[in-house]
Length: 253
Image (cartoon, rainbow, N blue to C red; front, top):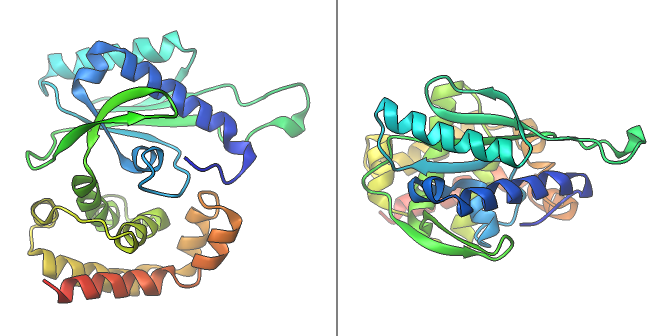
């Protein structure tokens, strides 16, 4: 995974430390399926920095099953020296604090000191998972395959807005990157999440971006996730090109 700014090196170390500990725990690794931006970046499917760890939880979703997974994760976090800063009362979501100072000078403080770890459930029965080797931590983890991941990334932009009234520039970047690299997506997953035919969803998403995405949204979210040269090359064209890619894909359906 790329590191656009050296101040994020500590954050990257903690991402990998948490991920390695989860992979090494038989209870956690049995029911957690890695996904999202960090997963894609570590597999070379995405060329940006990512700051969170996202999973699908495929275990039992009754209270006993959820509490067992929460207990497993909390023991992992404790054993590697992380503090739970905040957590969901009902789901599996944690905000974990690590020490942000290195050395004695204030100038050595890092901009981040919190990692979000989240496991979503229930999961779509259409999701496809496969084992992948993550070279940077020398572990094998089961994760969403490329088609499943792209389908969920296509859906994330509008889903996030419906749930939080917020738009993430990284969602647009990821759609653009996956299309530009010729990735395929699972049409059935998109339609399941959107509740409309994929052709309509693609046109609707292009229209949503045209009407709601501003240069400010793109700049604020992507500035810290891309190398400076890539950010400058893409920031002015990302919106227009993503809209075109979505409309072209819809026209082929």
